[in-house]
Length: 209
Image 1 (cartoon, one colour):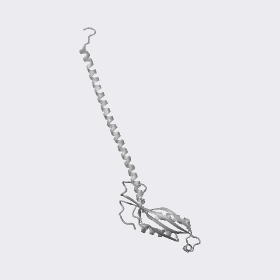
Image 2: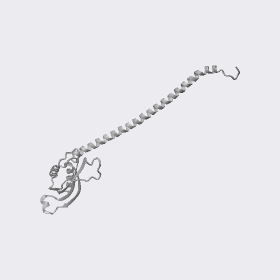
Image 3: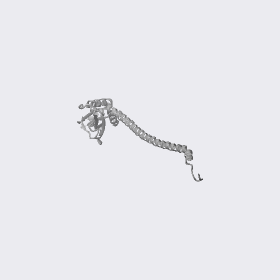
Image 4: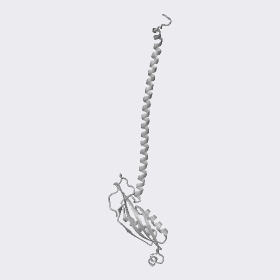
């Protein structure tokens, strides 16, 4: 054997175990890298799903709070008579009661037939479920003082069903007129108001009284 010849049997004997260990280590490294990538992809998918579920949950909670808020408002509107069929008998009773409570000299009225009101914004989805109505009411009120008119409308909104909108009020000083003096009214107020009511799909279709 010369100095430049290799003993391959010896080389194989001495390098076989390290070579096998190196190969096993590379295989293990490749397997670990693949497993890490696979787990990272699964984690990314689960994280994305978790974020989507959290967003859906937050949106559901928000919608539930919104429904509760509007449901409470709906119950309040229904309690004051804004939601439901207009009851003119209740209106007349409220006028009599308020006139007696405020000791007004007299109150007279003229009410027109109820009409469908055109809302400024109407949802296509709820157009068949919600209908807005209005009635026009002309009032002639004998007053002792201007503040009686404000008290009258405050009590009217509290006692009478529905929501009211005062379109106009004309005040005429009655001092010196014999009819006004006999009625003990210092001021005669002529007011035009509108009464608004809403019917929903859960309100029975009954004619207004």
